[in-house]
Amino acid sequence: MVLLGPEDSSCNKNVDHRLVRKNTTVSPPIAEPRRKNFPPALTEAELISVFRRFDGDRDGCLSWQDLKNAFHSIGSRFPSYRALTALCQADKNRDGYISEDEMDDLIQYAFSCGYYAW
Picture (tube, helix red, strand yellow):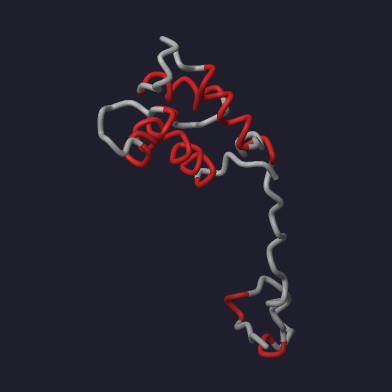
């Protein structure tokens, strides 16, 4: 029980303020996540399809710009950052491109960012 003094209440001066109980059991409502702020739910096959669709020169390797465009298309709020981080995490040979061999690492990175099937 929390006791209030006269300075904590604007009620009548005749009330014994030591006995006024402050409600401390009200908890804030649990916020439900709003779906519109979440990236779209995608399966692994759909993610692979999206990344392949944005291979601009059709050479089988994804550049930073290709990744940026792909992340933008799937709803990333920061596609430049996602593309750079994807290159850092998935580009194992450090040539600046994501090849077919590195696609699994790119998909794992996308899953870690929340682009996955619900």
